[in-house]
Structure formats: C-alpha cells, structure tokens
Image 1: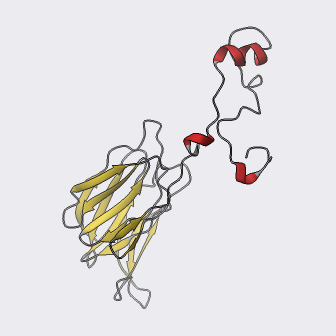
Image 2 (image 1 turned 90 degrees about the vertical axis):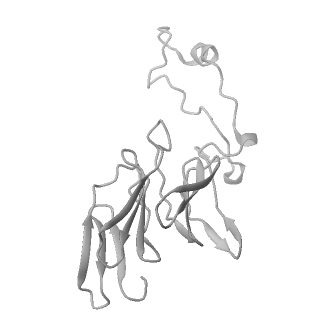
Image 3 (image 1 turned 135 degrees about the vertical axis):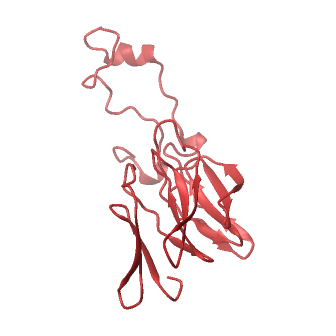
Length: 196
C-alpha cells in the first residue's frame, strides 16, 4: 500500500489495485509465469510506480506501471538467469533511486526512473530471499542447491559408477540402476538423515 491504495499480485491473473473500500481501481492482466514453484514475488511502490519482478523462464523482466492508472511506464527485460530454465522468486526493494533485485546468480540494481541496469554482483545464489537495507548497508541472504564448496562431495567418475551399478552391462545407467544414495553435497547440520 502507498497509504491511498492497495496493490496486489496473483500469478494466476496479474496486478490489481483497490481503494481502501475494496473497490477495484485498475487491473493489469499478465501471463501466468513459468516457474518451478509458482510466483513468490510481491509488487512494491517506488514513487509514482508500482514495480513487479517477473523473473520467469520465458520472459524475465521488471515491470513498472503508473500507480494511479496501471498503465505500463517501462518494462525492462532481464537476461535469462540460467540455461536450465531456473527462476527466481524474490521481491525487489527500493534503495534510494534504485530497485535492487536478488536473482539466480546475481544481485542487480536498476534505475527506478527508467529501468536501466545500473550495477550487479555475480553470486552463487538461487535468488529466493528479498534483500534488506539498514542505513547504508545492503544485506542479501543467499544459498545454493549444492552448498558451500567445502560441503560438496566429489562425484565419482562414470567408470566407477558403471562398475558398481550397470547391472545389464549396456554402458548406460538406467533409472532403475541409478544409485539411490549418490551424494552431491552434505549438510552436517541435519545429521545422518536420508537426503540430508
């Protein structure tokens, strides 16, 4: 809310604006985002704009609409986060005249006025948490699927896996032959829990 209206986003519909009596003021229908886990982002107010990050597989972008009318002011394409079609879920924040977005593999800032990309930092991160600002410091909680490098387990080479699991000798590891206990990383804080 900006103290005058309430702005909401539903991945199954798009952006909507209501007054405090619950009367619809405007709506912006948007395509359903192609993401693995649904959309976790929320709209934010930045001056006269409502900003939405749609960091999805087919059309990753930041969208700025006029907070009074819902008309598009600018749409800034973002580079694809991953060749694997991975997506991010965080909500942007306003930091001065910048929009800071935590994306898969980077933290990036855009100009509020026109969506221009200002700066970025490459990082081993999935892009799921929303950044936080305290005074002049930006904090971003990051994590990666395979953890810190010292927690990664050396994956055995194919010859070793084939010698142990290729039961029919066809030099292929089928789904039924694939080792159920193949570890890619370890999380010592969960103990000896399967999948941990």
